[in-house]
Amino acid sequence: MELREFGRTGFKVSLFGMGTYYDPGWIAAAKLLRMQPRSEVHLKAIKTGLDNGINFIDTAEIYGTESLVAKAISGRKRDEIFIATKVWRSNLDYDSLIKACNRSLRNLKTGYIDLYQVHFPNQRIRISETMRAMEDLVKEGKIRYIGVSNFSLKQMIGAEEALKSNQLTSTQMPYSLVDRKIEEDILPHCSERNIAILPYYPLGHGKLGSDNSALSDAVRDISARHGNKSLSQIALNWFYSKHTNVFPIPRASNPDHVMENVGSVGWALEPEEISGLEGAVSQAR
Image 1 (cartoon, rainbow, N blue to C red):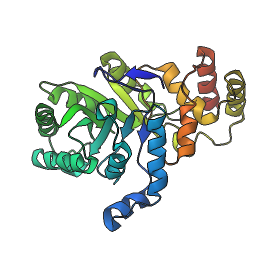
Image 2: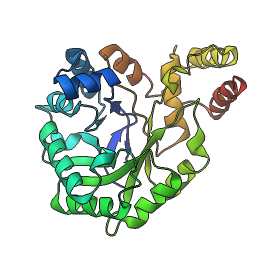
Image 3: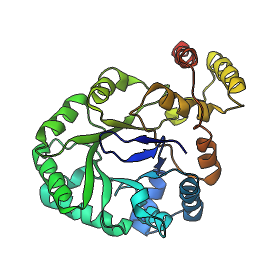
């Protein structure tokens, strides 16, 4: 598995990570019924990724999957795995954030979190208070790096300015071949400051596979040139071939999908193939 430095951290992670958001039903079952539907399949998927060199896992307190991640990494070298989790928007005041982090540490059964992210902004709580708690967690060694998720560029800059002794490491946003809005402002800002971007819904949340003859033709040609790659593999490789600071996090829901994603690494799209894919997607809009 090819590794690449994650933003300014110095830590090298796999070109893509494993997302552990499954669906609202899973969250409801985990939170209300303390059940984890299809947990054995999901656990095997995460372990399959780890066995094949994926060392980056993203979760969140709201997902109900932190304990699943703990099971997946049990017995492995902790310092070789990059674990990211997120604090929910209702827990962004100082005391609540500290408590939320401690809960996540217990759920993950780890002494530290590599990347702790604000899941959504909360206009009712000053970002300076949230970032003060984050920086105190860094001082205590409970988290290593600070990130945000679903922040506009203005909100993101506000978070950066609120940090006193640390820098913002990452942002997590929807981004894919069919949703490229962040290329207008957030992506250039992050590229300039070497802030890592974690695209969720990197395969377009079902929209990528919609009927598009131009895209089908482009994918067929690329697939033939690169060893019969699938649409998903090509869509993921588009990130690695185009950017150096973008780490998509497709969902690790079953082992077969994870293994398919592993096939997105080890080759690169040519510039004309990238423009051809983007042009084909644009034609369908």
